Image (cartoon, rainbow, N blue to C red):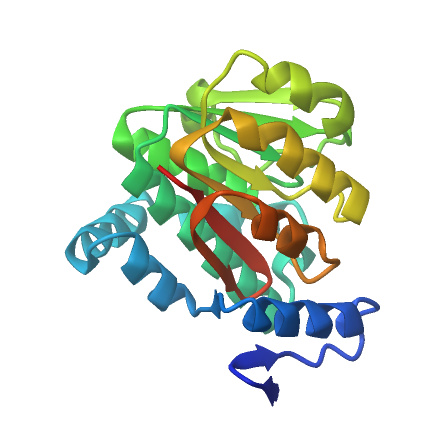
Amino acid sequence: MLDVGNAAIPLYLQEPHQFIGAICLVAFDLMKNQKLSLEELLLRLGSGAEQDRWREDLARSGLVDQIGEVLRSNGLERDMETPVGRKHKLAYCTLLYLLCRLVNPTVVVETGVGVGTSTAFILQAMVDNNHGELYSIEKVRDWRIGILVSERLRERWHLVSGGSRDKLPKLVENKTVDVFIHDSEHSYRNMRFEYQTVWPKIRAGGYLLSDDVVSNFSFYKFMSAASISLAAVVDEFGIIKKST
């Protein structure tokens, strides 16, 4: 790790966007926002007692074990093949689950599904809340898409096939969005497009989350211009809360 000010910069020497990621994290620090641990962010979002109860609910659901079994039985262990990958994915999905328990959203929109790890965590939160609908956009057509989303979770799930540039504007046109999650193509053009398309539809006090914010400057430039009440980066994903 290399410390620059208060920003801890991971030196992913094998990653092509390592240098851009380092600059992004320094820029984030200079903008007087914070790079937080998952625990620090969660404490800002809600009470520790509630989160302990929600974590117990997640453990009782057996979701993590179910996901592991499906990955193993389908030869997909490489989706979380390294300790770093597992830690990153579990932290990200834990954040999504706890945030959805806190917000109790009516509408969540995500772009990018893949095997459906984060999708399953969001839907589990909705099942535990007994409330909410998830709309997911995925342009890839493959048998692996959403394979981790079990039948018991699919009642609240709406999978939209196609690219976000084609499908996202129409999807959110007549919706008020409580939580939006970007996890599709991590190009500057696509990330900026998704943020700008969904932001007007996110309710006051709602959330925009984005994975892989160290890929380029899109997240940092967007949040500097948006009206927000909270902004943070945890590992490689960012979260902003729309001002009330």
